[in-house]
Amino acid sequence: MRRLFLLLPVVLNCVAFGQTPERTVQKFVDELNSKQLDSAVHLVMGGSMAPAITAAIVKDPHWPTYEISSLAEKVNGDRATVTYRLGLKNQPAAVHSETVSLIKSGSGWLIAPPSAPSDHDTLAAIAYALAHPHEAIQRGHQAAEDALCLSNVKQLDLAVIMFSNDFDDKLAMTSVNWKSKISPYVRNASLFTCARDPKGTVSYSFNAKLAGKAMAGISRPAETVLVYEGKNGHLDFRHGGRAAVGFADGHAKLLSKEQAKKLSWKP
Image 1 (cartoon, rainbow, N blue to C red):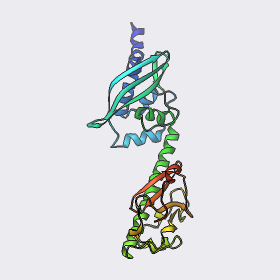
Image 2: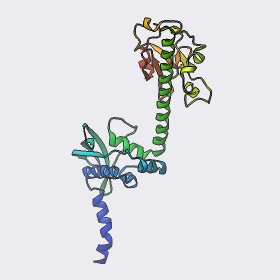
Image 3: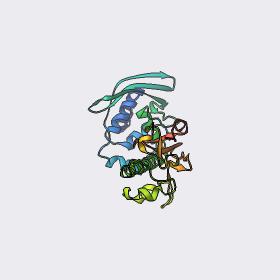
Image 4: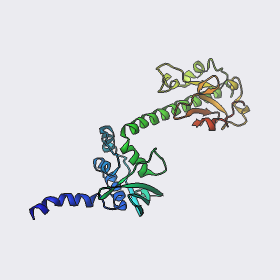
C-alpha cells in the first residue's frame, strides 16, 4: 500500500500530461493559458526554456487566452496529427483550423515542432519557439528592427510630403540635399538611420527621378517610390529579404525582391 501511495504522484503526472495526442494538445493549451511555460515546454519534443522568454511572458499583461475545440486525432504508429479549432477568448472572428504533429514518447506523446516557424499554425509556431528559444529571441529582435526601420521610412516619407505641401506641391529637392530639406519636418535625426547601421548613417534615400516634380503629376502615387531603404536606386533587402519603401501616397511597406519588380520609380 505504501509503495502504491508513493507511485501515485507519478501516475497522476502521466494522466495530467495525457496518454493520447488529443489530451497532450489540450494540456499544452491549458499550460499556455496559465503561463506555465515550464510545464508546457515538457510537452514539446526537444523543448527547452530560456529565462528571458519566461520572464517576458509572465510579465506580459496582454498574454492571449486561447480556446481550443473540435480536437480530432489520427494515429499512425508512433506518429500522430491532431486537428482542432483555435481562437482567442471572446473573439469568435479569430477562430480558425490548425493541425499539429506529435511523436510517441514512452507511454505518452510530445508535440513535434516544425522544421521552420510558421504564422499559419499558432500552436506549432509556439512549439517551435519552445524548441528553439534562442533563435526565437533573435527573431524577436529582428522583427523589432524591421518594424523600427519601416516606421522610420514612413515618417521620412510623410516629411517629404509635408515639405512639398509648403512648396507649392513640388518636390523641390534632390537625392543629395533631401535630408537637409526635410530636417525641419523630422522630429529626430535618428529617423535617417536603420537600427542595423552605425549611429549617424543615412540608411535611406529619396527617389532621384522625382526631384523637382509636382506631387499632382505622379500618376500612380500608391505604386511610386518616394523614399526607400538603399542607395542610388537600389533597394537594400536586409530585413529577411525585404526592404522598406515609402510611397508617394504616404504609406510604407517592407517588400521582397519579387514585389519590388512592380514598383514605379518615374512619375
